[in-house]
Amino acid sequence: GYSALVVFDAAGRDVVRQNPDLERWIGRLPFVPAGPVHGNLDEWFNDPVQARVLFWAKGFRLADFLAATARGLSVCVLRNPDSAEGVIYYGRPEFVNILKLRLNDWQWWKTKAAPERNASGESHG
Image 1 (cartoon, rainbow, N blue to C red):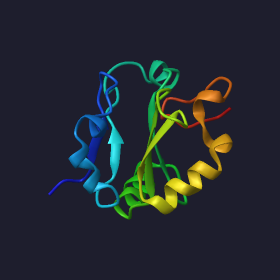
Image 2 (image 1 turned 120 degrees about the vertical axis):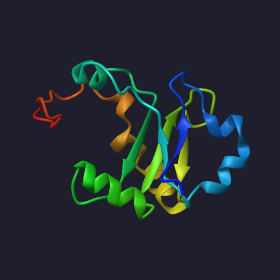
Image 3 (image 1 turned 60 degrees about the vertical axis):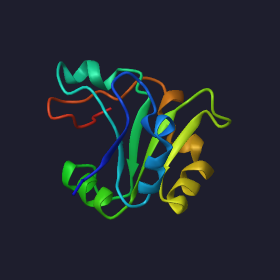
Image 4 (image 1 turned 180 degrees about the vertical axis):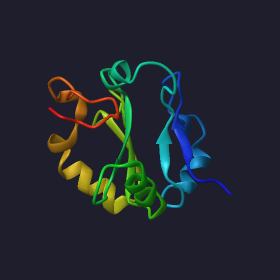
């Protein structure tokens, strides 16, 4: 079987909007954006990311992320200025509703600079 469904490709296209039949997988598989897998991590952290996966977990490590997505505790968020809210959400409705209610608390594109990170990617600023 599959572990996740890529919904935002490297060219910046919303794969689900191009293939609406993929919506049937919402809540059944985690939706994740494709991202850069090569190069300098510092450049990646400062890139104006158009998509992220937000997840509910006790920690922020890879194991926490994988456990959260396996249990359906994640939402893939795509920035989309053409949508009414400027955002498209892919995830279970109860978690999407939480994010919609608290948009100003988590939206990354309205924050100042990204925090500094050490070599392992941990934030320290």
